[in-house]
Length: 579
Image (tube, rainbow, N blue to C red):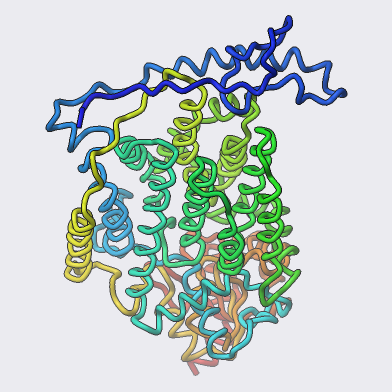
């Protein structure tokens, strides 16, 4: 096998008639790619803009050629086998990276954020109510609607993550929280492998895949990303979608019928499927612009979209999607996962490194190629306004980088192509490092004193003792609690007693959310609202404004305090308990 890079010369494909070019038009020799503008393809009503569009394409093609010399020199022959563009060493790295990163992130890793070393990885706020919902569905054999957990809301609850919640409940019954962690690591790793396969199918070398993984893995390692909850599992759905589309666009697959059952499952695991369907729609539009046959894609798209109503709630999913789309400003102002990214925090630096991709995205859209550049722009905007979308935006950024390599090779006869490996390594060649990485994670996770890899998660940061005192002494009294702790209390109390609020802001009225923040901040009139809701017990954090004003209020008395929580009860109630 030769170890030199090779240049593949490709014939330039023109969709223009084989005739001399008229003034202002491109000749077949100048037309590049299978989607070049064709004078005969323009409808009459667009004729006035045709010359300007063709001139723009001619200018943009010059930019395409700037990428031709961008490649690394060859290594010596022996080093090439390990370190070349598709060397074996990069495959080993790509095999173990998700296992190491996700495994440690969820079990032992809290360093890097200025936290003491005797703290456990944070159990996601929403993990608790997702588990409570899954348990309810299995135990009651029905959906938790009307809402069973809040006394402030007794309306309809559309559990759009019901299938993921049932899966979560099953893992918990099999082996507790540690089984949920193991399942999440497996799902994340498989999704990562699908993403790499999609990037490689578009022509990105394994060395380049490793580089971009190292650059952007910091996005996924920030607090609250990889967690035992259905939303995190959907990252693997995105990766599989990219792989299916890459196989289709590069000619490996002729049909995409697999997307119909794929989206049916996705719709019932999480409503992020709406972004997946939107991405598929953009892909179909791109194929239409390129004048490719789209009848098959239209049928698949309609069936995939129809899967949205094949669920226990039917058409209610549509209302839920619209609710997310019309989210109130208070979500972006006060709820953590809806806040805009703070670039003073170093984990957001990795997202900032992706922002320059806006330029090639716009560039390619001006070339008439909307996939995947349009989705990159859309999700970068969403991520700019809410950290909830940062990880999804990076997934699209990674596939966009790979797609750019593929598209450049369609456009330029001088595009550099790395010589492939002589043969694929045997399966054991990658199974061994994967097994060693898994063994390392398990060893550390099971021997480290401050590991979350256990049947019952350590709920540090949650009001564990305060909740016990409440259950023992005040369970018949209404409780006001913080938003972040609502999911934990849902799971702890199982709806008996009910609580004030939890992390499902998309479920209850926005007026309740606004009223909650008015009360938890201790703004004027908070005590009147407590009376209106007949609240007798308050459990809040020391940092909440309500903790400060309740401390000096004549109607309330502090009865418990620890590092995480403060508990106040009505003074008359406290006196009756003491007597």
